[in-house]
Image (cartoon, helix red, strand yellow):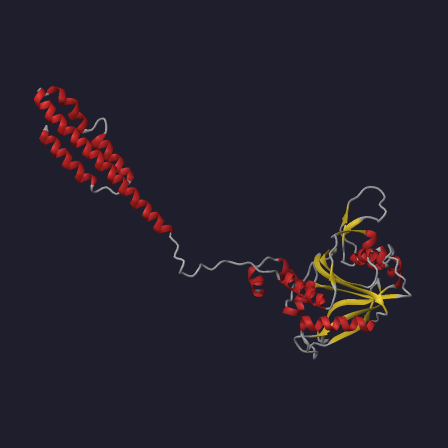
Length: 347
């Protein structure tokens, strides 16, 4: 039995030295120290020996068991430490290495153009105000000199919000322009007034390369004593030079808008041909960028301003159109297609 114990000890320690994983270590414990192990079988058979031999063999067997248990615990500690060190090594960060590049978002080209437009007018002394996208019919049409029978009313017929009963300000609708904020600002502010109004607008349009049912507009309004059309031209020319470059020329031609009198269409010389005529400007040499004019006296009277004392001018531009002209984009639908190949050009 003593020889059997020595052979068992040598075999168990040799086997233990080859282990490097906790599951295999647990199998070793069951094999050499478990209830059905060879060592426990020897301990159970001690009763068959003579008393003198039983004492000697029992002491050796217990020494072997304590040794194997001690070696088992040491080996488990060593394996656990090795596994922890390997895990720490995998998670260690070398702070001296360059960081991995992070994907950073960017502003949409419409947002970039809108901020550039608003920034230009801020530099000219204009305040920036915003208004609701769901607007009253009276503010969107009636108080801007667009009565129900006006042809422009049909042209701008838009998305109405369902409502019940008679409403003092008419029906509600998705605004067709940011011009209602002219009324809201003038009703609450005494002259002088200088504001620009950026925001989303909606019209019942057939979508094509230059039209969408939703678009972003910037409206401008200035009211004070002795404002003239020359002030309007000077302001918009200064804005054009800020956004398109100081070398660009401007042109004003008579046009009609219900809430201004006189009204004008403003254009800049074509960036493609510099006024000579090309495909971009349809051989005209000019690109229209906005409508403008002197605020109609009826609009001033409607908000309580005295048109014999105060005059004003207003203008409005589509941000998408400005962006298209600035960057040479030929289809407005590209702004809303969420195509990264297009959007990444405007980093």
